Image (cartoon, rainbow, N blue to C red; front, side):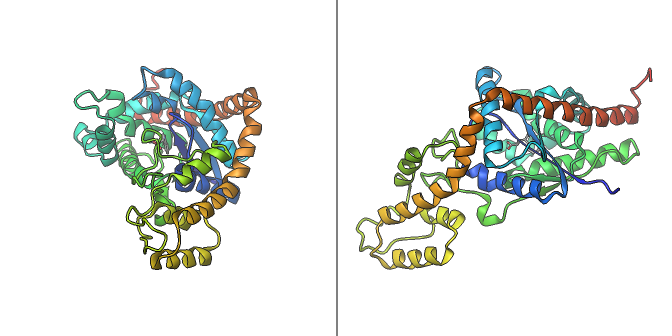
Length: 339
Ligand code: TRP
């Protein structure tokens, strides 16, 4: 029997997931899960979330369930995918310690994603050390499962690069092919990043410009009606800009009828098509996409105990897998003195 390829991916539980997560990664994960070609693990990375939320642990506790509900809502099936919780897998912490010895401080300083986050989060000189090294802990997440494939948003590529370096270094120093080099699996470029409702390049909770998978129909409609379009398109008769117009960006991503979208674009460019009309159409498209997700989410939300059972069972299975890798790593380093 040939072994199945392994998928590992994860999210920080700092809030509910939004449609940016959905097109950026969740959709891919469901498709990969259903292909039947992989052993799929989803890690809710609460330890990573705590690296910059140590003083607000309730937020992480609360978000753990929210993220689990979002997974189940989009079609992650616990029969096919193992959903597990990072803090319940102690092997990850020890692996992190071993890998830290293989990584330089200057290499960590060059990680572009972490650099951007440090700026965004306005840490200044007060970056928590745990936050600074989270790419190494993420390398532990990925390698503990011996994952080949990591479906994530494009911003995670630097973490994969760093993981591959650690894998190569480890395998060469200890002279055994124990760890596996992972590949990223990214959405097509045009889907990669969905802008915020306000036209900001990034949809994010902290910017307050997101549509959540849990949003009710009224909320979705209000958000769509408030979206950024072309600020110079004042009268319906005026010619409008399609490029950089968030409503059209979303239509490109979500609308199934591409011909109709092209017609609307032409009309908008030419003049004579109002913002309200295109927003109404986008609202219909989004409502249709999100309705089944929200319905499933509500059904699971009625029984949180059952969701925790899924997480407990998944974490138990993951604990065995990650402990096994840790044993191999300890053997290779030569610290299993009493075995
Ligand atoms: N850093 C990822 C994010 O912010 C979350 C994450 C944690 C992750 N561990 C992981 C992603 C392992 C992929 C694999 O989205």
